Amino acid sequence: MDGISHILSLTSAPWCGWTMLVLLLCAVLGEIFQPGVISQAHASLLSQNDRTYKDAPVNFQGQLLMTIFRIGTIAMGLYLCLYTGGQSGFGVFAALCGLVIALILVKMLCNNLLDYTFQISRRFMPPYEQYSDITTITTYLLYPALLVMLRVDNLVLNRWLVGVVAALFLLMWLYRLARNYVHSFAGLAYVVLYIATLEILPLGILFYLGLKTISII
Image (tube, rainbow, N blue to C red; front, side):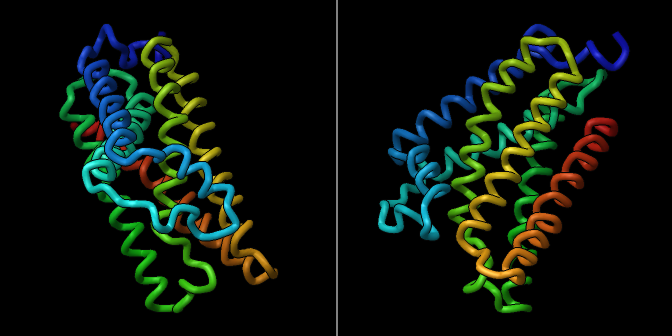
């Protein structure tokens, strides 16, 4: 039982079920307000250009709802793979959402700083839309995994599922960047450096700070 059970579930924490329902509603309404979000994300991942639907109309409500869905899903995945017992209130989940938002803002700041310092945006720096598309695909894969986590009382399985989704996210990013930007060894070096410093390292920091947040609150 130690370290394996006593995790969050729909029975021990009913707020998880309501939160998952709200996140699903955000995803559905986001697709309604801005049709083609999922197909657009897949097309962008496979396209040779920076973005397949450059002229697609942008809907603020749809973008906002999809952003809520992405942040909430990532925070829930972080919670379910790190929580091992103790307080399981909605406030802890909200704190993790704030942590995810803070990390996203720091990454955007780092991207802008690199662009300003090295002027590499035209050669390499991936646009925000690409990141949003791949994050959308990742969270749509993570959401059903979260439903499994909430039904199966196994912390090891939770961490494996989150780890697999995180690995798929990194692989999709690597594929997308390599397909569009790797034309030489220097391009490959840029991609590897970007993935290591602005994707793998922040993920490690997110898990570390998430564990600290859960243990403190």
